[in-house]
Image 1 (cartoon, rainbow over the protein chains, first blue to last red):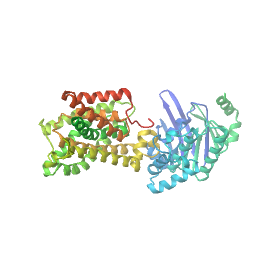
Image 2 (cartoon, rainbow over the protein chains, first blue to last red):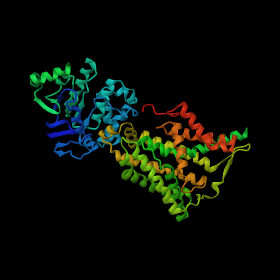
Image 3 (cartoon, one colour):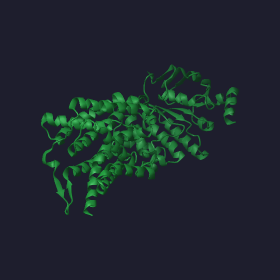
Image 4 (cartoon, chains in turn brown, orange):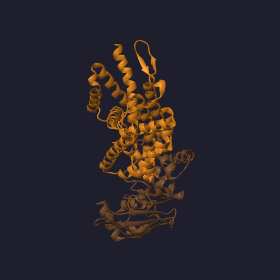
Amino acid sequence: MLLDIAGLRKSFGAIVVADDFDLTIAPSEAVGIIGPNGAGKTTLFNLIAGGLSPSAGRIRFDGRDLAGVPPQGRCRAGIGRTHQIPQPFENLTVFENLLVGAVHGRGKSEREATQSCGEILDQLGLIKRANTLAGALTLLERKRLEMARALASGPRLLLLDEIAGGLTEGECAELVTTIRDIRKSGVAILWIEHVVHALLAVIDRLVVLNFGRKIAEGAPKEVMARSDVRQIYIGIEA
Amino acid sequence: MTGFLDAIIQGILLGGLYALFATGLSLMFGVMRLVNLAHGDLIVLAAFAILAVAEKLGADPFVAVLLAAPVLFAIGFGLQHALLNRTLGRDLLPPLLVTFGLSIIIQNGLLQAFSADSRRLRSGAIETASIPLGGDIAVGVVPLLTLLSAIAVIVVLNLIFYRTAIGRAFRATSDDLEVAELMGIDVNRTFAIAMGIAFVVIAIAALYLGLRANFDPTIGPVRLLYAFEAVIIGGLGSFWGTLAGGVILGLAQTIGARIDPEWQILSGHLAFLVVLAIRPRGLFPRAVD
């Protein structure tokens, strides 16, 4: 297993945001997570990427226990993440944003990094914006940059946090194609998304979270057909 | 007329010294958002370090600073890694308190080690050498070297910041610390390197401080004030802005002194207030903050 989470629990005082959570992801598998706001989805990403430490339970990545490993160590181990609200380094150019991930996150030399970052920018359709300051990008470009930068650090697991939110149908379809390509290149994907049809176009397995607990897991279509899931999902839509 | 022209030239040269004081401060604030209240005292400490090396080895201060610089880099690296990194976080108070404490420790440590006597770096004839510019105007070699060194320091810092991987890490970390960590940057080490570089700049500033005037363990806080003013006039995050800030401060002081000798310090502070009132973010602020 690439990612192996067992008995994960996180509480802030009396508020439990992750409760006895288990999840495994195989190499190059794509798993989706849905759930209402406040279900603990982003918290889960923070626990995996190292921004938060769990109150109990363990997270293994590629057989290695991540307890006590700081965020930069997890990045170097091969975990890349994007944020719901894109957080580019605004005073750096688009290209420099990627170089940071490639040089510091992956330990590449400046020359190798320049090569690989150029390819990633090309793949994500940002090559024309390479020398623009990231602060000047549009929302779609920022989302693409967010993904490009995570890819530059050479992840084996990519955590996508509501990357399709706020995009038009056309933009969303382009994004789905890009994510499929990334997946084909052998990167495992764990994707939190409210735009369910985008999610279903990519993933092999779907997990539903509610109040920090996993309430359903399995083949996407079967999970979406369950009445308890529909209730929660319709709750999202309402 | 010659008097004012002279005041302007001397002011620009004096600005070079203030820019050197301010560049280290600008670097620390720019990279790690550290407001270093001990900055002036660190400059004085470095001046004493150069003095000690020069006296022990009988070396010229220009040679002594080359020997002291790597040591100061190591001290800066260690200070940041072992102490100052622990103070940085959402709360702005701890770094202020710790650097204020450092300031007191350095002043008293220097008093203990070197006494309250005022000292000076000696470099022979160059101290008093000057280049006549025609008319009644001449520029001193040391003030001229000061300004040229300030420009050189800023050129080198800009090369580091905009042309190297560590410079990119400085800018990325300054933009968003948490994301920088997610991108694999070791923030503690990055900050420690930045502080090491700031200490080398401090050593250069100390060299010219000591060549230009007398120093004693208590003069740090006033250098800190000038450095702060230069950084804020120039705008946070821009080294060229810091140079401009230093020059504006120097000009205001020498022109003020030309009008009335008692006005020198006051007119520097007034220029600072005027800039704060008109452009609160400084003259050359960063594009996005």
